[in-house]
Length: 335
Image (cartoon, rainbow, N blue to C red; front, side):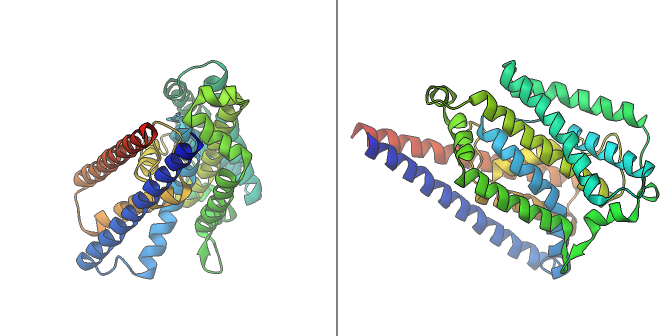
């Protein structure tokens, strides 16, 4: 029994590695193709822009990965991002001398509170995550309109120090990239090398077995949505600082890009499966598409269609690979 279980784990691990290598190979081939069509693609300046523009997506994808691993979903992150970004921008407008660190802390705290509310609804009231987050998405978006009165906070109303959060650099590396790297390192360790990280996978793999084994499933779910909220709040500040504009409709629909990055990166919607290394590949692929398709003068309408096709293909391939693995595991147990 233990031998069959270990074989199952090994098979899944090898499948994930093959999938990640295949995705990296596709990224390399795609990059070569784009470079042949537009020599400016692989220049240092364009690559820096690509990574910088993908940094916020990568932050949100880390949180969404953990949510999806627990068999959940968070459709409210676009609205949470807008709310945290708007409140922070309005605070900076009223207090121009506000420290950038305090601005980041404020936005992160607002997002954390939003995540705690959603976590409570999912963990304590047994509302389906898609319903809870869909409802709170409208609540948070409405709050953003009410607080701002439907008005914008524009660049000239923001202090230079606040805009410097996203535009500044250390040793030539943009702040957004540094924040993304640090976040990935922290959560790579958290997910793979801590007891709580293992609990997150256990809850997503089999919630009933997790409860029987003594894991506090409700607390784990609450924690995951709180982390998602905190990362979204942080992203809201970075978004507003980067674009030097806070609007009520900021990041509307952006949650779909985040979910797409997770799915392409091998995070299973069925829960229990997903790795930070695979997620990075998914984020990178979407970043390349967003950066390269305009360089190739592809119509915006075709851009959406191409991205949608690649996401659908990734889901189909992932489902086929998982089904094949499950069949092999079943045969192995019978033998």
